[in-house]
Length: 304
Image (cartoon, rainbow, N blue to C red):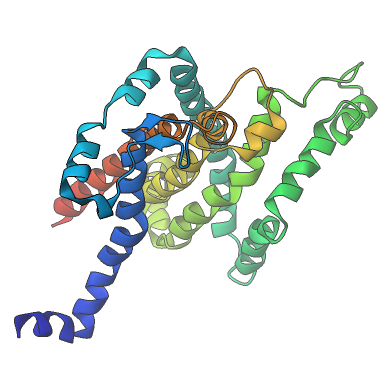
């Protein structure tokens, strides 16, 4: 009877729905990946051992659990290829996110100060790139950055350079592609936060003798911190695991962790090592989310 009462209320069912979603689409897949990461590579189908077979009874399942090991995680910690891939991914994500914040903040600030009738137009212009296929946009950058591409032609015409510069297959090309692709993800949360800010606060700061710059740093910037945090997380987390942009625009000598994961899974067919890479990557990406959640909780407690 009590169980019926729990599920009888629509509000209770709505509250349970997110947990069911997390269970079905996060925890269960995570459990499968974790199990494979603790297995051993094998020339078989699937290419790992042990494989749980419920039909063989509890003894076989117990033996399969006993055969699991942490060898794949030890390999990641001992092999420079994986360590450098993780470090490179974090550095590229940090640099790219910093550039995105430096570019996206002024754009979002300018959008929030436009007349109300022009703000939807500015929003549409920011979202327009999403209407084109992601791969087409990256291939367009290949044409722009190649040796005889548009960028070198423009720089030569302006006499900025005397000979064509090698842009393609470099870290610079990769960062350009990342910044271009993820810029809307930085602008939109910043704009949403800045647009909601009460303009009378700036008027009050001006009446108290603050200059525009001082009012910005004392009023606007602190109030925009939630938007900054959201934009940084929306960009930093997927950039760490980025695969397509580094694979198409960067050089082949320096791999990011997304490329290393793809090589292990599809080229080497080493599913246990690939799964271990994915598990460690997930843990690394959960860390900033947990820190952000903790800061948000402290902020809410401070307000109370």
